[in-house]
Image (cartoon, rainbow, N blue to C red; front, side, top):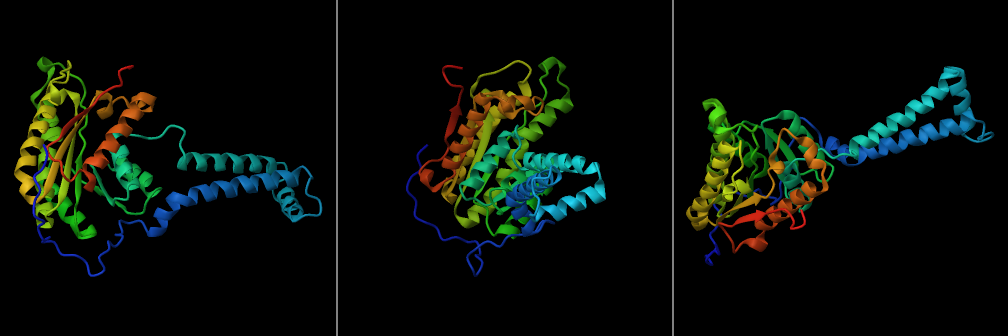
Length: 331
């Protein structure tokens, strides 16, 4: 739906005197963030160079150069083991290089969206219930930008969501964008679905986004500005699939919640949208290898680019949009 032009409201939030956001500490120093972006590459180059210099010295091609004393030290200290040291340095350099530039990227839809916002210049407050996943997301963003912090939290618990919003607001001074990304549960027919599994799916994929929307929209209303984006699957638009009854119900409910919130929050200058990913694999926690296919990576990139646009000032005239990103016609 197209928003009606509104008179600008003065922000009720307090701004810092400098007008800038101070980088908060989360147990890792600024040096750590810089090292994630540059240090591993520098260390890999150093190890490769040391391995090459050692090899040149050991085979005798450096007579009279600065390498000669180093080669003599290697022969005296390691003997024949010096050759193993050369191989060890080269392999270590390769491992370090693989750490910063993995051949198979560790991807997920939420992480790809977070990286897209970071590359667009946004400060990212990443949250995840799984600490290892959160650490990896923060590490990948820090390779592109230092403006990121991780917040481990269980967003199915309302008290933790309230604390999360308060902590982010304290660290960064404002909250401009919220993106909710669901998680695909294991497939089970409705007759085999226990009450616990049904409730778990609803808690993670419908109740949790509501808790996040409620807490964050309160902050955005004080700022008189904000954008909220809910990511869903195509099942939200009636494309049901066997074994995903609870997940489909959550997605349909999230679309309805999106449209209702768009109407209710429009007066506070808060835009609310939903993007329906056209492939269930985008949300899978059980088939990580699917993320390595070119088709799924292209779809994730498309969702991320659309997410950045919908939350940007370029789309400030829109709210309540529910958009489907589907497979290409050739697929």
